[in-house]
Amino acid sequence: MTDFLTFLNTADLHTLTKIPDVTRTVAGNIIAARPFDFVEDCAKVRGVGKNLLGRMQSFFEMELNDSRNSAMIHVEED
Image (cartoon, rainbow, N blue to C red; front, side, top):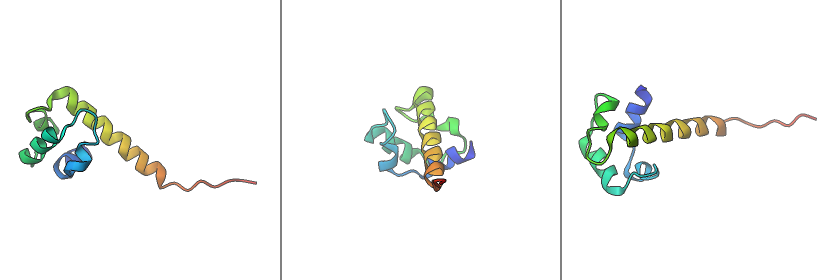
C-alpha cells in the first residue's frame, strides 16, 4: 500500500486526470492537499471520497501491472 501512497503524493495533474472520474479540479485538490500520511487521508479531499479512492487504487494497480508486463520480452520458440 505504500507504493500507492507514494503515487498519491507524487503523481502529476496529467497522470491523475487519466483516472476515470478524476477531473482537473479534483486532481488539483489532491495536489493541493499533499502530502498524505495515510492513503485514507486522500478520501477527505473535496471531490474524492472512498469510492473514487478505490478507483484510483485500481488504476494504480492496473498501471503497475501493465508496466511490469511491458518490461517482459517475448521469446518465440521454434
